[in-house]
Length: 286
Image 1 (cartoon, rainbow, N blue to C red):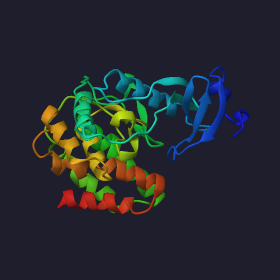
Image 2 (cartoon, helix red, strand yellow; image 1 turned 120 degrees about the vertical axis):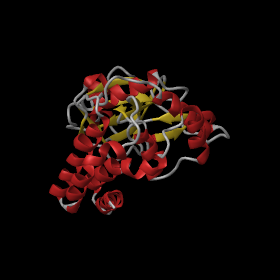
Image 3 (tube, helix red, strand yellow; image 1 turned 180 degrees about the vertical axis):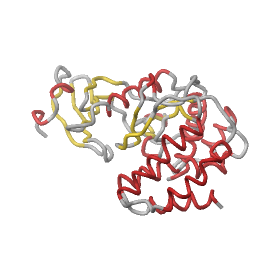
Image 4 (cartoon, rainbow, N blue to C red; image 1 turned 90 degrees about the horizontal axis):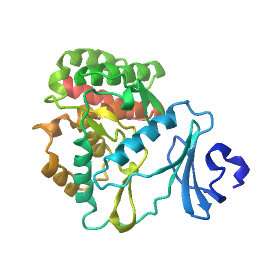
């Protein structure tokens, strides 16, 4: 494609010779940039919400500083409309890829903080392109139910993609939030959107984490997302448990912690995601 079609604030001075579109998700346009120093990755969204890429960049930096051996792409250039990142060449899984991911994620989750919420105290962030409340707080159940789940239910009902029954059910479940959220834990640095498409396997079978919705949260948020759509091997979870075992009963909480991604998918894509979230609420309300 013509370089004149790309944002000058992101590519000027990088010696870009050509650009070709690549797959990059539903939120931004993605390109491979050919430069004299090797390829780079550009993700760009015209008229993006001003802090969309700012929050992603903050997440990449936070994870890169505490990666536990996992790869996190370096930021080459950033602006309100997008990011230029180092290019990750795809590879094949090795015998240790899943184990390395479990251990690395456990290391990342050991990064603690004093409050749940946004990195650097940011009051808002994104899950996909859906804005979510990240106002810092010391109360995890309050954060999860009242700042995450209820607003997403209300948004889904307003759009007609979530049944009104969902609000009745979450109002019934809210007084049990402390029980449903599991034993108290300190805030952990989470990727926040860790489905299989946001884990890349590079050269030598190395794991790379991309497209974060990073914030301070209960670490089971990541484990729940990993099990929602699959794509992670049993060795990954075994290695994670060996290094940093979750509290007893964590598997019984997985579906509870899958509510935010299910609701975000309902808001963004419709389909059967609203019905799936409603079924989770019904199960926990029984």
